[in-house]
Length: 75
Image (cartoon, rainbow, N blue to C red; front, side, top):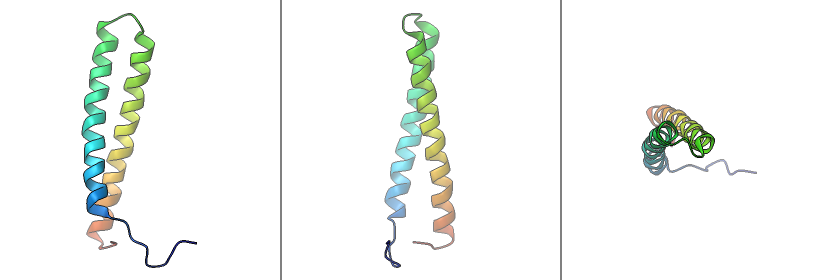
């Protein structure tokens, strides 16, 4: 069972989510560019771009949750 007084470190989680968002967007853009430029292993580049885009989406949703929780003083 989880303790009643358990809290998460929202400011640290926010920093990590921002890093994940920025790096995932840059990585997805780079992989999409590589998929467009190089015909060799194009499917792998597309898969990597999609995976990184999904990671960016999860980080963005996490930032929204963190913002909500910090705004309502839930930490």
